[in-house]
Figure 1 (cartoon, rainbow, N blue to C red):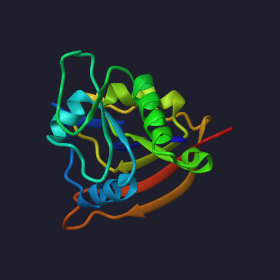
Figure 2: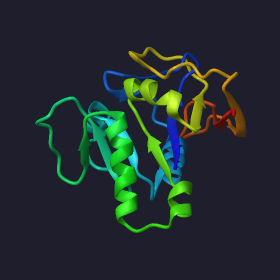
Figure 3: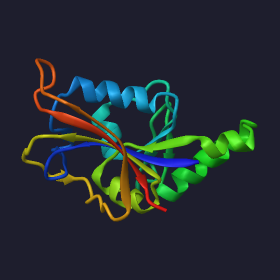
Length: 175
């Protein structure tokens, strides 16, 4: 299993403010959909509530400390470890071949606290670097380039739909 993190961050690692994304970037949303579609996604409760619904074509796993929390159509867990364990068990129960499940990918999609907790365990990062500095109250943890190396990079200018220049970067954990 590959544990991946996907996020869009600004020049100062900013992610959001008041539980909302800082920018409307359709190209990043398309990249997010295409990258995570068909894979389980793990997110914190606040991220889930800011989205407002379960993401289609993905198993949605919500982390919350509230033992009474319930939402239809999602899996509720109380820690990152439980989320990963729950996913691993659900894969095994579907009789998926051992080599296939080893190649499966699960995505951490936010928020800031969940990213921080998951970063030491992640194998891959899909980061959209947005060339902007905006006021924020939620930040992505620092990416230590001694531990991560770029395996893919694709730069784009701003355009009529995407107000800031951006770069899609995939990082792989160094062995």
